[in-house]
Length: 406
Image (tube, rainbow, N blue to C red):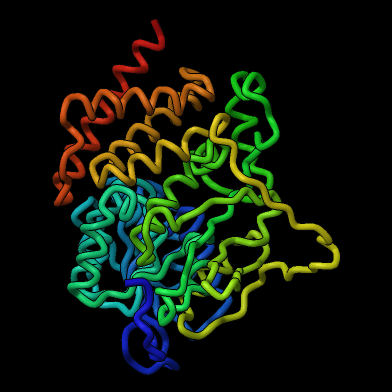
């Protein structure tokens, strides 16, 4: 479920008491933005656990700054550095994937799930199964295992609050009591750095150019996914699981200014939209304070200064990733998991200059065609099934890259 209609805090207790919070992926962009908001609101949060992948130094500094109780680094080889950095602070620490999962199920009011990649699936799902409210920023939970993840949330009563700016925008204007009167929802896309490029120009672009997003400061993979519009394809799959609408009710519009983040159209002709500056602290704060709100340092909109907001339909020829994502969504969880894994491999190959920009989508499509033909895109009913598909897609992807190289 997205939200639960409660006017209490997510933990079900006193809304004025400090919110007990854990953050998975504390050293990434979402994690650091979350902890920035925590630091700006002293007394509002008690930090239970923080985790990071390999950056023990940044994790320790964050844990000390927000007075966390526990810190976990997924890379076991970094445990010594973490332990030394936290010596004498009273903050306990651990290392390894099992320790990350243990941190995820510690009793809290809310868990911010911001681990990048498939590594975030198991710990986040473990927290969902025990009914923890989740501020969800890990796309793999829904792209690779959406049915499994949302079924677990319904069974446990866990509240799922979307952190992604577009899904959070839709959540803010989605009238749960009027679902039958919703005609469609629209996610907006900036169009990335190559919105106006021709195919010939796109074929020659460099990784450096693709990483220069015009509006957002993001990690490498999501920046490339934005440039190909694969990220918007993933977001359509996520929206399908988050909101009780048919696949044909999910739309995308290119909006270069990144001011309108999401819209919902109703049967009376009304279109409700959420607007804001492109600052992830706005949707993060909405989740942390929900169902209330909290102040952020995000820039305030000056609509008079903006003067013009424009919208356009995405070009399916120059941005085929949207078509691939919709096809995967229609085919089910295994196809979506394969799409995600193949994309991760191809983005890495592009960044390493082993594949051209347009080759990302072209090669992903060949991977999915081969896996479909071999019968490897069947059901994915468990995390183990998802990981089997993920591994197979990576093998096919490396094989396709070898063919491209020759």
